[in-house]
Image (cartoon, rainbow, N blue to C red; front, side):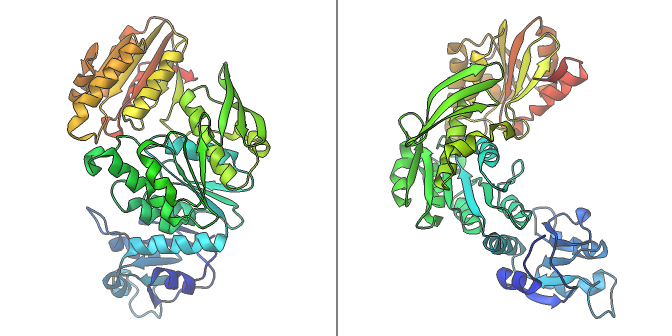
Length: 461
C-alpha cells in the first residue's frame, strides 16, 4: 500500500483533484491500463506512439482507485468512461497534472520520504545492475530493490511506489541516457549513499567523451545529504575531480576502504577475506567471476556507508542472485557451460566477460559476440580492440553476430543469433565453455533460446 492520502498525492504532484473517490490509499502505481484493477493508481503517461491518458477510462472501469492524467484528459473522463450524470467518475479519484511523468516522480519522492527508509542509489558505466543485486541481498533489515532494469525516470519511481511501509532500505539503480537524467533520478530518490561503479566509453555516441560521461554520472553527488557518502573505485580516473563534491568518499578495490585481502574459487563459489578499516570478515559468495568480486566490494562499500558491519553483511551472501541475462550459467549437453551475459555490452564489460571465459576449465573456449552499441565514431576501433583482447586471452573461437561484428575479426561471421546457435551446436564436441555477449540491440538472448530448441541446453549451471 502507498500510505499517503489523495490530498497528499495531489499536493506532491501539483495536481488538481477533478473527481473525488473513496477513502483509503492506493495499493500500487502502474502505467499500463491493461493491468489496472481495484486499488491501483494509474498514471496516464504520454508516449512516442500513444498517450496513456487515452486509456484512463478503461482503468477506471476496471476498478482503479484513481488516475493521474493531463487536464484535458481529466475533463473528458466522465463522457469517455460512459459515466455521464454521476456525481463522481466511477468512484475513482481523478488527478489533473500538467505533466503526468513529473507527477509520477513527485509522488514517488513523497512516498520515499514517508517511508523514512535509507536509500542507496547506484549508477555507473558497467556493473550497476549486479551491484544492485548484491547490495539488495547483503543489506541488513527489510530491503526493497529495483527489479531487473527498472532504472529510468519511469522505472525508478515505480520501484519506490512498490515498496511497502516498514522497508528499511531502498536499493535503486539509476540509468543515464543524457545530461540531467541522473540528476532527475536523484531528485526523486534522494539517496543517502551514491555508488558510482566506474566510468567508461558507454553512451559515448550520445555524450561525446568519457569526461562528459563522468560529469553526468557525478550528478548524483550533488543530491547527497551532509551525512551522506559516495562509493567509488580506488582508481576513479576521470571521475576523480567530481568526487570532491561528496561529503564523504568510500573507496573500493585494492588499497581502498573496502578491499579483498584474499580470494579463492572453489567449485561454484568464491571465498574472499574482506577488510574494511579495523574489520576483517570472510565472505562466501555464490559466484566465481573476478568482476563480480569487484561488484561485491562496491555493494559492501554501500553498506558501510549506511553503517552496516562486515559481519552482518557476510551472513547474507546466500541470498545473492543476479538479474536475468547477466552471467547466467546454462549447462550444455556435452558437459560444457554457456555463460549467457547478453543483456548489454561495452568495452569494459566485454573485457571482464572474456577474462571470466578464459578462467573457466574447458577443452575449448568460444565467444559469440554481438555488436557493442553507442560507441560513436571510434566504434570499429573498440571492436577491433576486443577482438585482439579475445585472442590475447586465449579464446579459441570467436563467432561474430551481425555486420558490425565483422570488426572483431571473428573466425566465423553470421547474420543472426539463430544462425550463431546453429553454428555453435554443430561445433560442440566435448567440454566447451561458451560466452554469449553483445549489446541489447543485438538480441543475443535468441542464442540460448535456439539452443534449447536444438536440445543442446540441458540445465542451468
